[in-house]
Amino acid sequence: MGGGGGRLPGQYLGGWGDLGSQTQKGVTSYALSANRQRPLAGNLHAAVFNTYRRTRGQILFVAPPLIVAYLVLDWATEQNHYLNSKAGRALEGAEEA
Image (cartoon, rainbow, N blue to C red):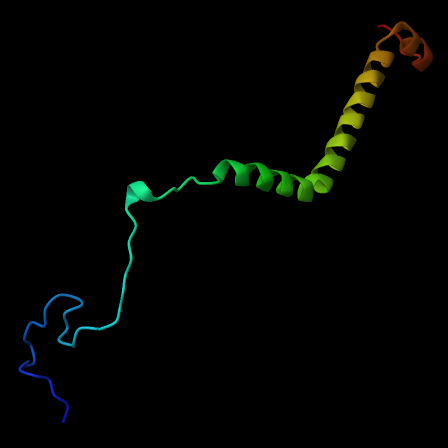
């Protein structure tokens, strides 16, 4: 029943990867030297076009609230200047104490 080789219960089997099985055949691994890799290849090009694509997709969600906020702020500023002017005070009937 099942061959365990010469291993006995409680006997050290070795480190991980050396658990007593046969070595694998036909497994090939490749590596590339760190100084041969180009980790930033195409980053600037991708950043420009990705930023454009993302901005184009979000502009309709961001621009209308900003435009409305600007117009409200501009109206409030003009209204404040008018109400604090001589003509505005006369029209509103504000009396000085």
